[in-house]
Structures are given as C-alpha cells and as structure tokens.
Length: 375
Image (cartoon, rainbow, N blue to C red; front, side, top):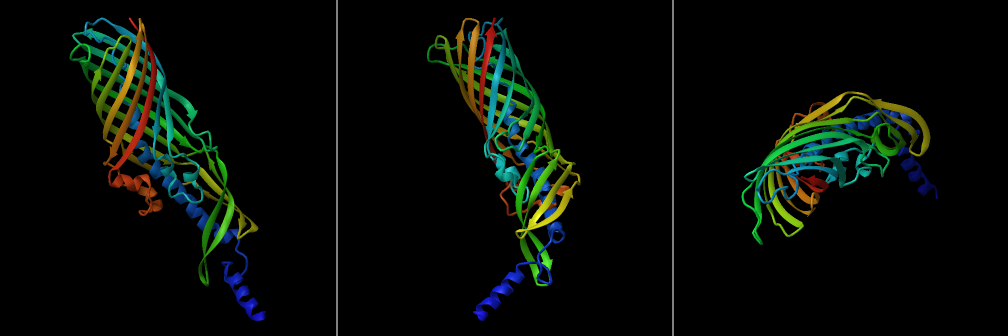
C-alpha cells in the first residue's frame, strides 16, 4: 500500500507548478493569461479586415432595376422603387476568431453571417435602348449576431450608378440582351463584442524549477468597448443580362465581373481584461489587462465573378423584382505587413490571413427583393 501511495503523492506534487510543489497562484499564471489575451486581440484585428476585404464587396453591384424598365427600347420611362431587403449570406465568418484561445471568439461567431441592407432604386430610359439608374443603400447601426450574445454591430452606406444598353427588344423565345457598366462606393463600420463579458477556461503555462507546467485557469474576460473595423471600397462592374418578356412575367439571367479597390482596416485601442478566479480548481484572485493599440489594413479583394438570375412581375405601373446572386471573390493582393499583429499569427492555423496569402476564394449568396413604380 505504501509503495503505491508514494508515486501518487509525487505525481500530485508535480501538478502544481511551483518550485516547492505548492498550489499555483494567480500571480504565477498572470503573465501567461496576459500574453494570451493580447494574442487574441491581435488575431482578431488581423483576421477581420481580411474577411471583410474578401466578402463585403459582394454587396456593392448596381441592381439595374431587374430585367429593366423599358424592354421595347422606346425611351421615356422612369422608375422609382424601394428595396426593403437585400441580404448577403457570407461564408467563413467564424474563422475571424481562429487563434483566439482565452477569448475563444470562434465558438461565439456563426460560420455563415447575414449581411442586410435596404434602400431605394431609380431608373430612367433614354431611348435607343439606353438606360441609367442608381441604388442608394444603407443600414443604421444594428446588431447582426444577436443569437450568442456577442454583438457584431454594423452601420453602412452604399451608392451605385450605372448605364446600360439594351441591344435588342425581346421577341417570343428570343431574349433581350442588356449590357451595362456601373460604379459604386461603399463605406461602413463594424464593432465586435462591445462591453461583452464571458467565462473562460484556459490552460496557462508557467515556468517552474521542474520545467514548464500547465495549469487550468478560470475566470471572466471582458471587452470594455470593442474592436472596431472600417472599410471604404470602390467598385467597377460590367455585366451582360438576358431577359424574356412573357406577359407580366420577365425572367432574366446575367453574368457580371467586378473590380474592387480600397481598404478594410481594424483597430484595437480599447481596454480588455481577464479576471483570474480559479487556478487548478482552487479559488484565487487576480486581474490582467491589455490596452495596447493594434492596427492592420489590407486592400479589398480585386476580382469578383457574379452569376445571377431573377424575375420581374409587372402589372401596369407596379413591378416586383426578386434577384439571386452568387458572388465569388478572389483575394490575392493581401497586405503582408502585419506590424504588431504578427505576434499572434500562427502559420499552421487555418485563418483568413493565411488563406489569403495563397489567394483565398470566398463566396456570398445575395438575395434582393424590390418594389418599384414605372411611369
């Protein structure tokens, strides 16, 4: 019995990372907690602009009034409409939290992220098949991630103008071909986790005379305020649509190519803290903070390929439009000068920054519903 008891006592003593074999304290695990807290913030400031740069441009193209306001190419028509719903479902959003261990944002963020906006549309037919139009989109400050309690608040403004030429009028099974070019500007702000508090369980590593030891540390982390992210993008689009005129029903199909310029940036200049409440299962007390300023900016992903389909239902002066798009974006012009955020980058992790180094392909599914009056 004594022979078995002695090894057990020695093993138990080695579990406590102090030179005397005593219980670890908050002071001993504090440096590890503080370093990880800083790494988590830097990871987020690095990953979020990369994600935004390769997804947000998908919401920029001119909608072009659906199938068009004047299929017979006669000219003189005018339209004004409301778009109460234009929403994008963007992939890979949870990966902006990859590399965050103590804060663990990856488990709090959804993989597919909804991105709504609303606005008004205008259109004027000039005759000879030419049509000009504009979209004005916006979103007042809104929490886009209410489910988990971790806020992701966004506010944005977008304006697009376009001109198109309807090459021919539709006739029976023959569609009308509509070639257009447009330009848009998009500006907005995103804030993550403002004043959010959540529990954590983190394996802190401390140095002892016996070498590094791992101790489970528990407490609460808190963002005082939240990391802020901004974007200003400019985009040029060219597109070809084919539309059919079947009584009141006007289905159409299109292919577009977009070129985006501008930058997405992130900044963490706020107080973050983590309390230490239990170390190796035993009560302890301590608080560690991180309040350094971290910035990172990267260019927008330049290239976007955009197949779309939709239909108009036109009854007199009133028209309803539903449009579905799939935007495929390539991010191959990443800013690799990461500055202070480099400390948190683990090249073995599957995070947006590392993916984009090798040209990351991102996708957004966009649905638009609009109503307009045509005169």
